[in-house]
Image 1 (cartoon, rainbow, N blue to C red):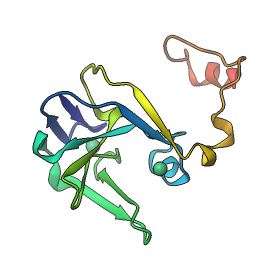
Image 2 (cartoon, rainbow, N blue to C red):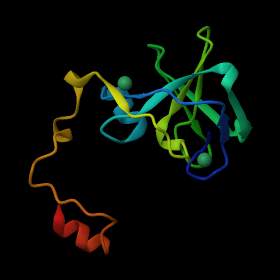
Image 3 (tube, rainbow, N blue to C red):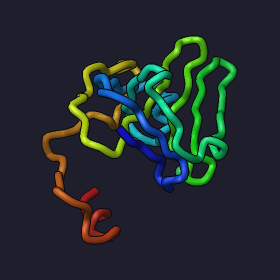
Length: 139
Ligand SMILES: [Zn+2]
Ligand SMILES: [Zn+2]
């Protein structure tokens, strides 16, 4: 299994199958991703290998210990070795190959953003909008 960041600078490989995924809806993961929730999983450190870009990874740590590692070129969150656990945290959006894994756990749903709830009236497009203007009209 291969994965890379938005700019392709940070590349990694995982050997074997990927487990199911979790999404965390807490306010920290929201800020770290800019999205409603992250989607991630863990792999054994022995199954994980950096292919390129490791020296361009920067790390931000809150006093509480919450840590976000990211590509210094494009800002994508990148895998993060969890010290003392023998595991590596994998942001699922970076994976480039189809996986059988599905989201099986939602964390911190009580802190989810109020706007996360999807209404039945949501417009759903198979692809992107024709233009920024047409998207603006839909909002
Ligand atoms: Zn990058
Ligand atoms: Zn979180």
